[in-house]
Image (cartoon, rainbow, N blue to C red; front, side, top):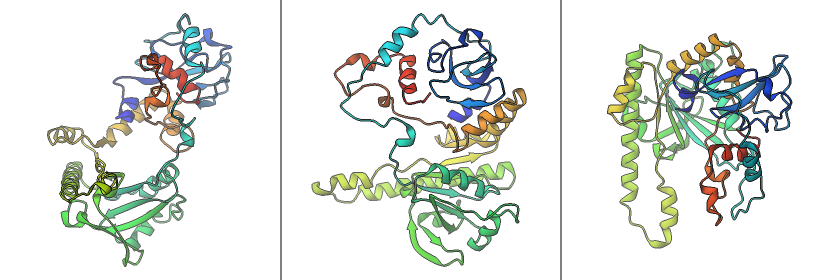
Length: 358
């Protein structure tokens, strides 16, 4: 939903504009200089684009500021009348009972277990990008009808690509159909020769499940995606019910609660915008309109070619990415100072800049 909102022309978009009033100011100083926009990057006079630059970066003559705003004509530079007080308040010494990490890169992440249902021609590219995001020891399970031996050749795209190598991900191959219930009840990993490796998994074990669109007609692909999503949700629900019916003794409550955590919501890729209504009727929130996102991205690039570099960086592991984080990372919610819970967006923005985040 974040990507759809960012790339579409409904809501807020990214715009480059030159602001002479900001020349000589650091990127930190311009954090609160737009009432209706958020500064997220810089395009220097020589053409280099930098997202989330260092706080000490000084705006030069000819530089353009990249802002997230409703439209190019809906924002302007303010008179900084409230900036000084916000800076003093946001940068004061913080009293915290709980220690938080100073940046996203320093977060201790647990191993992830992901499931891809179906097959795409660019599967190897997806795995390479995913490998750069996940922590070491993570697993990606692939369930589709392609035999494991043939997948190796398909990863190479008929010799157009090199051998798929991963640093953090372990690939588990499963042969089956994502729309056949019995194939989804228990997943068994196979080696490249089609022999069981002994690794098994159930749908409630995964941190993320992605149902990929198939290479058939749009309506058939979306129908298969919706069917697979409903089957997966039903299996997950029954697995939870089975566990909740088990007797629990007090000494095991904490262990059982950890094991009985709610399963992830599967995400289904759909191609036809009309299918979105079916997902709403079925009360399915997990879907991604891939064609719509691609079309919106192309439209933004056609309007401003610099958006190619911006969107390219945001959608790959290298450079700056988008994260959803708890507000407690930026406000002192664990102290007796109540004013920390009633701060403006710009106060939080300044706290984020302390971590070199936007």
